[in-house]
Length: 334
Ligand code: NDP
Image 1 (cartoon, helix red, strand yellow):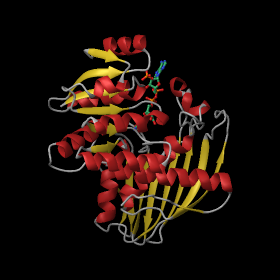
Image 2 (image 1 turned 180 degrees about the horizontal axis):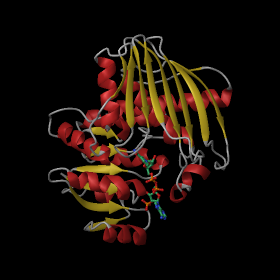
Image 3 (image 1 turned 90 degrees about the horizontal axis):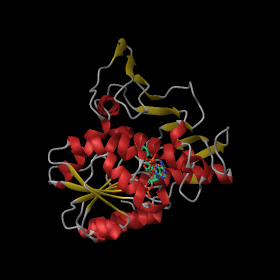
Image 4 (image 1 turned 90 degrees about the vertical axis):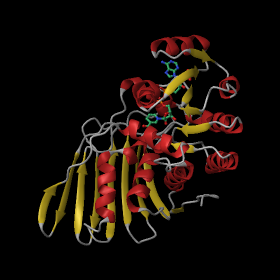
């Protein structure tokens, strides 16, 4: 599979280039950057044969099978539409777009074109989250009553750019991290939040965008979710808890890009440490994508998963802005 990277980004250099190359036959043939010099330098650094500034040129290159879009968020829509129109499979970064309508438009266009469209929600690719989902499905904790998501981190210095100072580029902790948490909860429980209440704040980093958010979601089953995201917490650690009628799952350190952390299951029988696979999250996502392209399965998170996680995140922001409960509007998502 021959890939074009759209966006000379940090996430590609730190995780996704390696993940693409870890797949059988996975090859990166070109990179698109807004700057010719930056693109050329990026291509040199990462041993990519070609670079350019034109998305159209990249997607019309007949040797390109798939594109990975990891530009800033406001660019995803037009770039994904160009790739889909050219008949390329698409792996797009979250949040898929700035609005639910745009995100749904991208995914519907991909369906119509018959190409695979996936969202790079890496957390559902982790051994820890897949193990927690299996425990819930096996009934080990009974009926789920509630979920607590702790995802307040300290944004590293090299990422303190558009995320903290550009609403136009899709900055703010809600499109950055709440969107992931929405996907995690949907993945674990297999249902979509109905309504949310929320508060958000600027707590030392955000310049014109929120850097912290707390929200509470109602699920169709009656389960409740509380979710906390921030860019400003150096020592909070991350965690995920799922509480049910017959047991509780406590996971620590699992809201991360690395295959790390700890899961403890507590039931009437006592407390047990639960082992899980330590595979690379991004490599798993790429392997699942390849499986979908070759007809053997679906991507870890497909396009509609990306639309729905965006819908939840935008409802959280709307709830925080308005001070009122918001029904999540999934648009045309099935
Ligand atoms: P970056 O800021 O690293 O990259 C975004 C764009 O900024 C690039 O496309 C590039 O533009 C430009 N850029 C990057 N570095 C520089 C630089 N040193 N000087 C000038 N311009 C630069 O963003 P991220 O990689 O952190 O995020 C990109 C996307 O990926 C976002 O949509 C984000 O939400 C998502 N993401 C997803 C993660 C996940 O785990 N799923 C984790 C992190 C991010 P150009 O291409 O024009 O050169």
